Each structure stands twice: as C-alpha cells, then as structure tokens.
Length: 600
Image 1 (cartoon, one colour):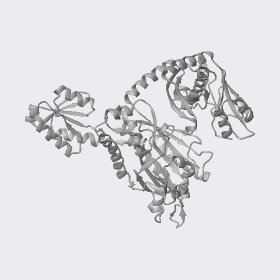
Image 2 (cartoon, rainbow, N blue to C red):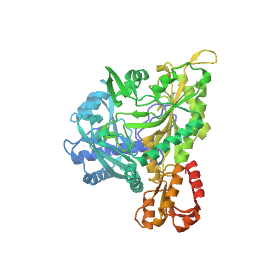
Image 3 (cartoon, rainbow, N blue to C red):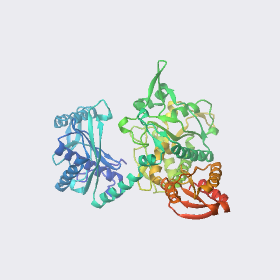
Image 4 (cartoon, rainbow, N blue to C red):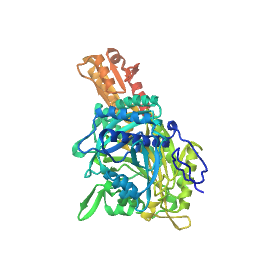
C-alpha cells in the first residue's frame, strides 16, 4: 500500500489500485492552477513557433502564470508582439486541440528534436540512456514534458501576454541569449478582467515605485543587488528590526553577533558548499578559499559546540541579524524582493526531541502576533519527509507527529494542509503563506526542523542519564529577509505606513510666520519623545502645506495658529484629511505614544 499522491491527466487511464480520487478545481486549488498554466505555456509555445519560427527551450508554470523561453537569434520581443500572440493563442483555444501524452525512448526523443539543440541538451543531461521519457502533443506542437495537462486547449477561455524580458540558456550569461514571454490565463473571461484590474492596483502599489516616490531606498550599478537605505528608508528598516528584538526579549531569545566571512571548510562541514557554492561570494585569503556567509546556521553550530551542554541548558535560542550575501544572477535581481545583500530575523533553537512540540508552538504564536500586527492573514502547510531525506525514518515520524500536534494546538485540526514529501532533506518544515491586502500570497515566515546539522557538527548534550544525545535544531524566521518584508509591507500598505513604522509621522504646519517659534517648540517636544517630525517653514499657502504633507504620507498634520498658541494646543488632521480637532500638546503626545506602543 502507498500513501503517495499523483497529479494525473483527466483523459489518461488509471494505473494500479487507487484508494482515493480527487477532482481539482482552478478556483480553489494551487495544483489545479499549476496544471492549467502549464498547459497554457504549451499553447504560448505553439503560438510563438507559428509566429516567429523560434526554437523553444523551457516553458514552466509559475505561482501566478507562466512563461516560455525561446531562441530567436538577434531578434527580440516587443510590446507590439503581445496582440498577435494573443490572437494566435485565441485560435489555438478555439481549435480545442487535445493534449496527447506519448511515451518515447530517449533515442526517439533525440530524433524528434533533432533540430532543437536546447531540447537535445535537456535529453542528454536529464534522461538516462536506455530509458524512456514523455512528450505531449497539442496541434502541431510536440514538447518534452512530464505533464499532466488539461484535456484540450478549449478549456482555456482567456489569455493575455503580460511582459517580456531577455535571459540566457540555463541562466548562465556565457550561454545563448533567449527571449522570454510571460502570460496569464483563466477558465473564465471574467477572471482575466478582475486580474487586469488587480494588476493596475498592484502597479500603483509597486514597492519600487513607492520607495522612489518617498525617497526610501536607492540602488546603484556599482553595487548591483545591494540596497542603499536612505534616511527615511532606514527608519522603517530599523523599526522592523526593533519590533522583532522586543519580541525576542519577551520570548527568551539571546541575540548573538557572528562573523561575515568564513573559511570554506565551514561550508564543507555543514554540507552547504556541495549544493550552494555557486551562490556564494568566494575569494582567496592567504592561499585558502573563504566566502561571505549566505546563512547563519553553521556559525550558530560553532557557538553551540564551543561549550559542554546539559539537558538543563536546552532550549538555547540564538537570534542573529547578521548581514548575508548570495550571488544571485544579475538578470534575477528585482527591487528588494531579490537582492545580493540582506539581513534576516534569523534564529536557531537548539532543543531536545521532547521540546520540539512546545518550541514549534511558541514559534507559531510568535508568527501570529507579528502578522496580526501587520494586518495580514496566513495559511499553514506541513511538508513531510522527501525521497532523499537523511536520518532515521523513526525520528522523522516522531518529528512530523510533533509538528502536527503543535499545528493542531495552534490552529485546530483541519485548519492546515499537508504537502507530502515536500520537506527539506534535513527535516520536516512548516510553510507559512501570508496574504497581503490584495490577497497575494507571500512566503516569508518559516519553521524548519534540522536533524542533519547537529550530526555534521557533532553537536551533543548530556542527558539526565549522563549519556550523550543530539539536539534538534529549529530554524525559524518571522519576517524572513527584512528587505523582502519591507517590499511586501510597502505594497501591503500602499505606502501608507502605520504610525509605528512610518518614516514621516508628523508635519507641523504654521498658519503664519508669527507662529514659527511655537511650531519649532512642538517639533522639539515630539522629537524628544522619539517621533519623526518636521515643520513646514516654506512660503507655500496653508492649504498647499497641508496637501503636500498628505501627499508625502505624513500620518498627522498639526496646524498651529493664534488660537493654538494661546491655548497651548494643536489642531490635528490625518493624511486622509480628516480633521480631528484641537487637542492639548500633552494629550497629543500621549495619543501618539499610545498608537506607537500598540503598533498602529
């Protein structure tokens, strides 16, 4: 008996005993969307072949759509190509071409794709000699593919070409230059209309646009992929870190500071060099290979191993905001969501096996407080033992049971789903998917168990029986990359930061030059309480000053005239131009302090 699950073509006969059959719908299942968009990628590829005679390379589904990379020699796509592509895909939809699955030998596949060196390369490197692979046919397109697919092209009712870019074969700049066309599709034309409306909203909220408008962050070609945090951007960045540090203090974490560079021997010991070296910045130090750290966990293992540990010492919770570097390809860099230099709210918990459930439950409660504060919802998924898992199956089973128990205690039974065989090779994990104001899904927070690093570093503690035992490591992050979380929150709030995070909290607006000194006194009092406050002493009219402050997203404007000076008060307006009215200076400061303390 097997508990494995498979995605299966609707029209393909079932093979072997089937204990459960589930029909997946596009509207409420990500796997259904993945298959739908994979099929749509084939249709896009067919259209590109018809129109441009290009050589197709790969065309995968994405979390929100799909793309196809093609070789076009010196030609390139332009926006003017979108309409012809959409027209050609519409013809393919109308034709209701069947998706036909065919099993072929490696030799037959090489013959099929004799005129396509890219498909030949895939076959040569990915398919073993003497074995078979699968191809799918729709219309006159035959493509290498594992499937599954929708039954026919008529299932796709709406398609749009969304953008294009240049890339390289296998992402290597030394390889051939390729042209990438992105698309989106739906089983209903109304869905495409809603998607387009949401895209327009997303453009207005794009963090790259907002960070330029608000002078928060800049980039420079002399350090591509590394953000320059301008004064106002640094205010938000530091507020996020300070918030997490306050949580650490309440939740029993010890903050540590670790080196940025290590001898590569550390990464060989941890196992990261084998899988990760290409993404590391490596350099020579006195004839030995060193590297910038891409993660903190090996350094924390060295700290744990530096002393004799007892079962009474556990759990040990190390938190680290160390600077990390990953050598992302220049073509993959994108604003603050894909960078080379970043910091994480990274922590590693070294615990006994019997403490897994309580530590994971505490991490989930930590996560809930963070995302409740941000006004974001979330979903939980348990990813279990993969095929290439390391460690004893019995330990995996106990760990998965402990995670499941913690998730049930936190969210309730049935309030989370399982991702079979999707865990990391070193341990099971909880994937936390958060939804922003536009219901977009982000993978930020994570909770992962690790059995392998304690073995690689020979980490031990003495038990109550005076025996040695291995600790389990819980990798956890609430924000994940602070850079990426900044981008997510920037778009989630649409640049309208809540007071506690805002880089521009208060603008004091004098009605007349006679009241400049009073306004400066108000500014100094607020500054002494740790608020970001400015005074508009320009020659603009009163209305213009208020409008400018609201456009710049100051949370509050404090209007000061003769009456306010006489009464030692201020007249408060919000950035939505709501007049809150007159309030004493002391009461105003108390109100702002309360909002900040409550993270509002």
